[in-house]
Length: 378
Image (cartoon, rainbow, N blue to C red; front, side, top):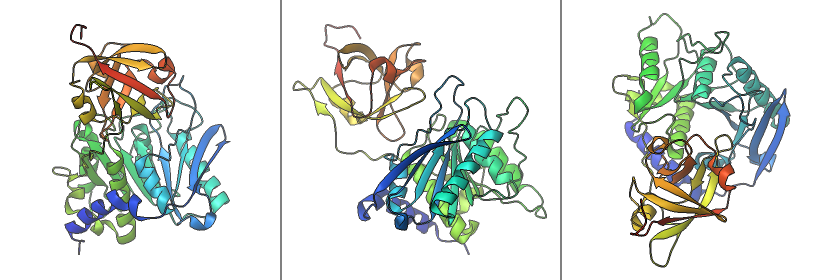
């Protein structure tokens, strides 16, 4: 019998409050390099605090000219929750950038073997990949005997191929595979799942699960949705596919994996006249230089800065003109834009340019955003 749908709802409510209910062990961050691939491992400082679970992150496509970094941020909510429970979370840069599939699979296996040698064999290993990393997760699910128990593919670029043709999926998953897709890129994972489900029952395949996030974009998935998927994979591995929601394998009407962000108390400092505020940099993309601010939609509404309006951005001693928009396309190449992300906060970016490098912004820095006075031109 299937587990009641209520168990999934209860699970979701539990994971959202879990970090407040447990005492988090101290975390240590280890870095290194294996066969040219850099790695970052976040793990409990005391080996005895490791619960045996391992999450490996398979990142997406990066330009060949981008820095080679394993940019794992343990403070991101999904990872922080797992680390608080005693998981190990690790990420590899791969040995090169660009479209890389087979070597990336090797680099993930090397990192898994390194962790096994350093910490002991994991009791459970899950790979979670974004975009190209989602393709890699899919290929791992199709392989004969990967060293992983479950695979999660977010926004999988299933049409991606290396120049030598490597990366083509065969639509024959043999291990638990969970797709997460935004509504604007749902067709590929849906078609994959439908094809597998239509195969004869005599073919020994593991039908993938499918979660749809009711939001447009590419890998536009927030931390709670990532954690929700990991919890679903945990249930699958512990109790079999019967533990999944009934609609998790229904491509025409898939399971809704959307978790709307919850508004928090404002963390910005407002100007005395209410026309601007100072926000803090809480994350920086090491590849593209996009800057995550702790500002929320209500903060922008409070200063009267609605979507489409321009404002003054001050970072250090420099001032820039920034537009409050919805994504990168709201401004021309090189212009500044600030827009909400799936987690309910804001990205500060430059279209086709590196915002963090331009303004010399790092984690913990502050920026000031102020609505133009009436006499100034928007």
